[in-house]
Amino acid sequence: MATLKSPRSQPGLPRKGGKAGARFSRCEAGTRRPIAFAFKGPGTTGVLTPRKLGKNGDQIQRLFLNPAEIFIVQYHGEIGQAVTEQMKAFASLNSVREGKVIWYGLIDGDDSNRLMAAYPKHFRFK
Image 1: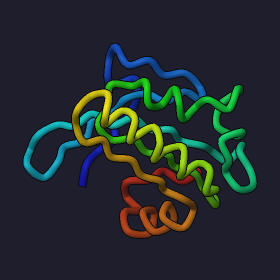
Image 2 (image 1 turned 90 degrees about the vertical axis):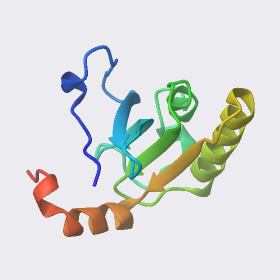
Image 3 (image 1 turned 60 degrees about the vertical axis):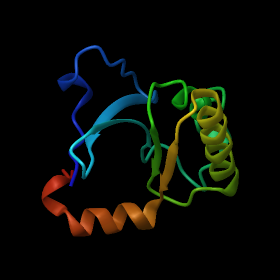
């Protein structure tokens, strides 16, 4: 399993509240792939829509400005179809523009709960 490092442990990576920042994960072949995450915390409620992603509803757009090959949005509840469609559109655009495969994924509340149940030692609960 890959490890997500704290933004403080990776110098040079910008990280501000609500902003997306690049992280790195070790893949099976031993190569490192840049990953950009957008984590939406419990301050966001209801179905996640683009409007709830960033002050101006542009967090997905800003997420895809990161120099990454894999883009992930994680939310503790239901993720709306419009978020999925935006992720797909930006991944396709980046793939054509950069001439390489771009991956994207969504981790909703059910997926988050399964991850926490499967790997409890890797999550801090308050």
